[in-house]
Image 1 (tube, helix red, strand yellow):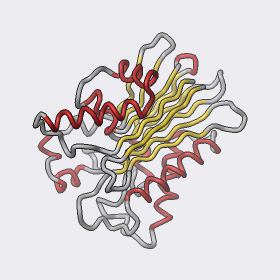
Image 2 (cartoon, rainbow, N blue to C red):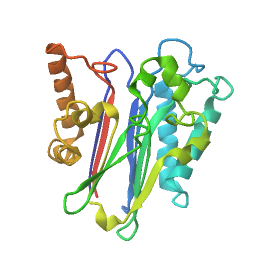
Image 3 (tube, rainbow, N blue to C red):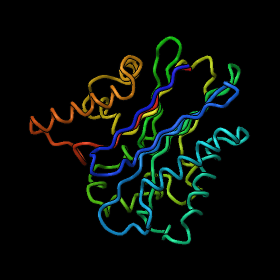
Length: 262
């Protein structure tokens, strides 16, 4: 088994709001991965005294623990319980009803022994890639935010109205019930050779700069590793800036990638 991960902040002046981890049991059978992309709030009050990096570390830690220790729970149930635990950790000090309370996108995958399937979960706009033994790559996406009219996301106020709301898009924040909104699935272990999880800061290689498709992206990860992909994205961002191109949202975004050959 080969597992590599990397995460890099968008700028060194700000803390990294992405979070990534892999857990492997002592038995050597199976494992799980978790990748979170913390949602950066606009300047101003978000009702929380802790901040997004605190939230992603708390939520990520709970997801890793539960996905490894509670094999009897589905990944959606794991996410629901992890959100509840994280909310309880700051319920007394913070306003969890605030629309901008710390939140994150979620990608999870879990696998067991050779006879056990590979489970996956995706919530919001991060990406999971599943590669079959013949090299075919399937991208698992929660594309609700991409189906919204672009003008509805132009301002923070309009985006807030669609956040964790019916007809909008969903993130892991303070409501455990959001777990049922995640894209989930199970794939036989024999049909999965490798998995990869990417936050949108790393997925720019495909989604923003169209340097290749998802299969080529996974091939790049196999050849150069997660840090290699992130470095290529950074170079593309700098090149676009030098050409005077306008990059949506911000020049550099936090980026996190996990690549695992099973």
